[in-house]
Image: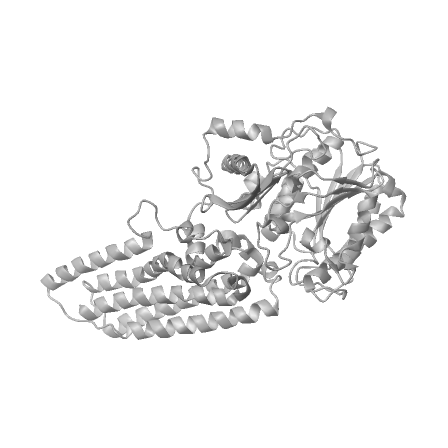
Length: 613
């Protein structure tokens, strides 16, 4: 019995150490960010992270504990037991090391530890892998191999401790009692102690520096806990009573006052072209390198149209940004509404509203529109025809994500001109893709790959717009350029940080009666729907979360979410709030308390709306 007991204790303790090893490895992996922390803070990462490390160790130890308990009553030869345990630990080592390697690689792009957010992307592995570059891949593969080998070697040594022994009935009863006590201790480790709250990610948060909190989080626990639970629970994000939430949310809504809306169109029925620019954050589009603008075509169009200076992306991923733009529906802090087709199909949408007005509705994308349920959402919101790489036959090679922007923009330019020659008005949308990682484009303007890819897309879109300008179709055309989300440029900007959320929006085209205007109003992507439809005298009451940017009577603020957090900004101040820790990460201005309450009301209303799907 003593050798068996020693084996299970050794399994648990070595598992804790192996999990804890991830913390210094992560800090080394992201040494540039870790260098900003003090020695005490770096030590705090490991010490605070031990709680979730011990919880994961408890999960790992549970199966060996159960097998050894059974072995008290069912004769399992020593060789068979060791083989069983070694096989189990090889599987655990491979799965755990894969999760850690994926987590280390993704954090650079996502800004949070591995969780169930990755699951929808696994349905289309080819597209998911398209973002991976060799520079991302080889360190992750090396980490996977080294970490798995270490875990297998350590656990094999522990399994070698095990010895079987014969016991009479009395000893078996006594041993079983001991095993039950051991099982209780393992359960306590899994639960995270005897406190009222079980183990959860927020328990390792110890700093106002979100990077350090993320570093302390065990990615295996983060993934398992988010994947195992329902992501939409009734009691989540419940900050107020229902009546109080409604009362707080009402002043934040659009006032539907046509009299207060600044009219900028010379027709209420223009042909509308929406160009969603992949990863076009303002940190990229405002960048100038050695006197050379990264996006000169976009910048030049500011003087010919309406420029929205203070617009913020509602999210950090394309699927969520697309819904925000087209449905006026902000992003939930944890889930993508595209993951819930039954809800996505009921959302209001620019396409649905225009289709009711007799518009032809089209969507074009050079990649795979099946990615993250996008095609389901599009058809569910009255997009009549979706063109993607599966029905495009272009004389060009496929890049990792699909056809590059040069050939797709040329195709889309032709499509728009063809639609303009028909009698029906149209709403045509293009989603670009070349400015997505891995940023491999047939272009060479900047050494930095992110900037170079953005410059390529800017040139492709600029040429496309020039073609339309030279045609009669331009006179009745409204072209809207807007980014789907920002990007980590410079790299230190993580998802949710203010500079990364700021994006461009520009209206241009012959349908504008006012040009060269800069709108300073604070707003977000979700406000496009109400703003556009009000200009067209189309009702927007079903767009609960969208407000007219050009209506002077409206409250003006920008709202966004990131991994279990939200940000909100207005002329009075700015707050970035962590819902896991239920506290502000950073804030500025004189009205941050009210902004926090406003953000909580928006999140609660959105969460309850999703629950009602």
